[in-house]
Length: 236
Image (tube, rainbow, N blue to C red; front, side):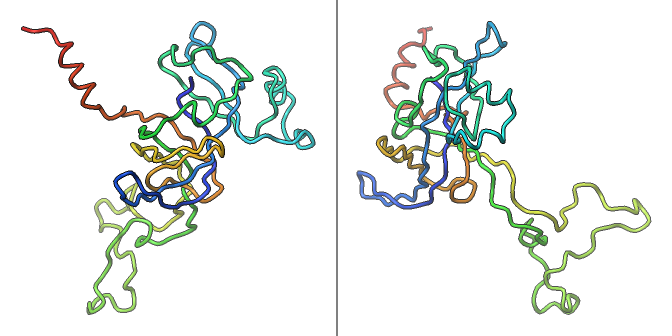
């Protein structure tokens, strides 16, 4: 089974857990995603599955090239707007997946599972050093700041080296970066509506495309797993 799915960010809300705690969650329309292609280590050098998300009408397929449309035709699926390749380290996780299979949120994820969410952050346009880098600036009552309380200040040196070092924090474009938020957990699943509730915030604006994947850092160990591992250790 694939380890991740493409999703659309719907917005944020809040839910209450069994203990009565209020948890802010992000609602994602996660899948369903169709398997467009299956890659294997014998043929492609690694194990992976290519998934498609959001179907495109036949009248709009002219926007794609013939080779791109041919990939979907070969798989026997509809044409999709978004395609993503998901690498799988363990070939056993792929199971009996083949082109044309449909992956749903309840098949890939489970409650309280740790996940990583990747998306494009909101664009903020051209911003100064205060908002872009969090610089503090001069105090309001400073006698030397004059009217430049949000000014960047001196950025160069004198004769040596006589230049501005590369990487200096300067005003510029902020946002539209590919960002991954790690170790979030699944707070709820509504399989009938293809909704995934994730505790916390994820990058991007509403209706933005995100990729939800199993956490790279692994799942939290339960007490039963810890005791089982301790029993398996050889006694010295």
